View (cartoon, rainbow, N blue to C red):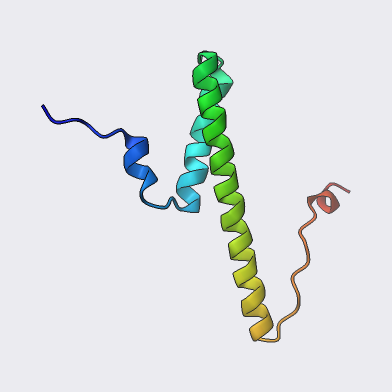
Length: 89
């Protein structure tokens, strides 16, 4: 009888893109918000969520660096940080 590979082990070999990470993170959050998971499963989900969050933050940093490099190569204006608080005023 052939062994089935678990999806996590099979997916761990290939890098996950930003959109897939966000989608999995949203799924984890929805599952955790239900509150019907065992403590052990909730901790595993939380740990995976932290990994996904770090992956997303890294992808966003990389994208920002690429944009800044492209702008500087084209003598464009410097990017200003986005401040969401200004829209609330």
